Length: 570
Image (cartoon, rainbow, N blue to C red; front, side, top):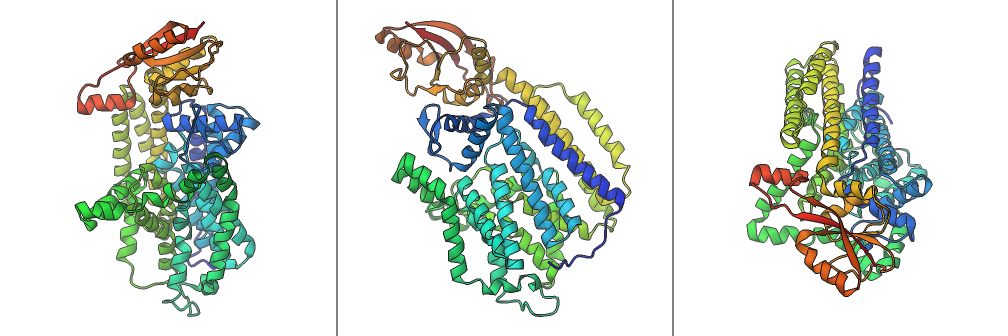
């Protein structure tokens, strides 16, 4: 592909510094492997994968119950890693880390394909240092997998449009199917949004004109409905393992979930129902605004570089040329996500990660075009914002988690100030400052969170105590603690609403029960002719969760409850 940006090269020192910063970011992510804490969602996903590794390949179970909530692919990958190595937190995080680093590689390939290797290098640095990208590895869920499959899909489809080689058509369909088997069919709107933009632009732009914006995409008009149908069929074929798995375990209910309930069911009627009561424009604009806030917070500390790049693009846009067209092409997935989730009644803040590779590339393109300009006011503003951001995040954790961290924070900020004056290029200086600032914050945050979680998460505390006792089956009726306890005992089961019928009366077992429910379960034990011994008790006042602390600090005191661990036997 012919690159339109001027082929100026970075100096050798600049290349070296950028690569060192990227390596530091990668090493930080690898260090997360040794943090053996997972929050409730991460622990739940690891439990589902563990159950799958011990049972049939198509089963989605959690704590002894069927779990119809997500497609299978992520759990297949983790179950395979558990079988090959061992079922523990390190292996679970190792799998997600490898996948996420692969998304950085495809981010590099997309930027290099559309721009050049310099923009590609800047893109990877920015992408690896987004706040949400870092936090997605502290307790991995679906985001690392979804990011990789979306990036690989977009790259393969763009390569197909440019080269017209059918190997990229097949690879693109395969990665698109993997994305579908990770989150569902709605991701295809994001994956195909750049191609749709190119195709519809071809009706308004002459691709044969000199320096045409579509010079690299001349073949797009030849993509007929037949090729689109071929792509859809191939994606369905590659997605067939997930379809078969849903059918085998859940029947028609599983198929309905996969094709509708988990996807378009979230959109069906949401806009009309809420718009009717609150006003269509009011509802939609409010929803999109909230998503934008989430996106911009998730992109810290590079949020303002992205905002500045967008403002600069709009300000200097006068006609469609190659650079304007490619920049707009890169940001189309970002716009597509806002439209899709604006229509949805279901949105989580971590969905913002989906578009971050493209936000990184867009920001990198802007920085590259301005690399030799001394944007002093801009750079000073970015460094100030980055410094304030770092201080605020550290102070927030200090206030919430009650950790003595001010000395370490001051030392880190002094080090940042020292490094700031070591780079001659102001843009490189800004990148280095923000990159090191977010890495410093993440080291502090993960360490603090790990220590806090071990001491104060009631499920983690119970799991630690159970690990010291003789091994017996574990049952619980406290849903919020199941995931944390499962980090220590993968065979924990949910007994539901005080139903002990599933317990083998001939084998001793532990039951974790809230004090308020103790009388009910005591009656069941008596009716079954069994005996129990209270092993230990925990007071939630001594072991509050982060959510409890937030409620206590901002909404007043919370009602603690006592939790008992009992041993049942004959």
